Image (cartoon, rainbow, N blue to C red; front, side):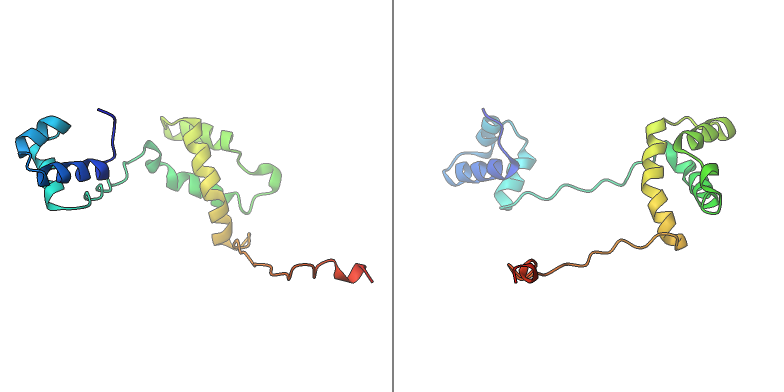
Length: 143
């Protein structure tokens, strides 16, 4: 039997149930449990999946340390600021972190612009829509 979406499965189950097929036969035909058949008969749409809480990361313990390093670098001269590699090595050497470089790199890439905005050293990203009438932009040059 080809793979079908849950909505299509519910529709097929309801169609067979209206046609007089027993619930046990529907279970065998579509290889589903009696609970799935009951849900399909009772409701037109399947219930949305539950959102799982975010899993804790190994990086969670070190996020305040990384943010502190990035905030301290705001006042440092350009050549003395920490690179991602240096931040990673400091976490491993000073704090005994068991992290991958990629985890640290992604966190720094995400947090660095936010910290700059929070400190007022970078502008908040803004978008100003431009509206031009067709043909109005180059009109002055034709005369």
